[in-house]
Image (cartoon, rainbow, N blue to C red):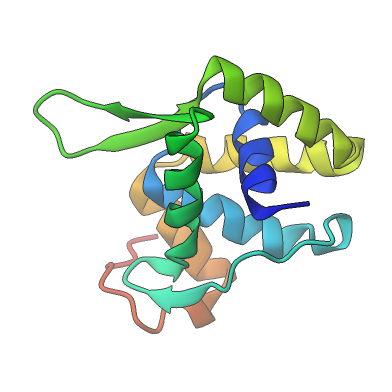
Length: 145
């Protein structure tokens, strides 16, 4: 499976919900850490960064998916905040790819996606730091949990 297909499948698992950049980074990190036995793919090389595990390659993949019309950027007026979500075309294509991963992997990806989307920025980074302290070494974030 190509990396772009995998990323699209993960986005499709949320049924077109939006994802912030921090949620995206932490979602793919958690997928690789929590369910490696269900996936034979390891596309990203996360390194400790300002807010924990980070790989800029994810943004290259997302840019390609935006460029071909599978993902869209949601911008908020008078804000620098952006989020990403599947387009109708991308959701349909991503669901098909997601199903090919198998029911167990699909269910766990959905759970992880929901988990990262329900937490605030601070909560998400803190949870990652508590479970994976080795990714805190280059942090500029003050962990308050």
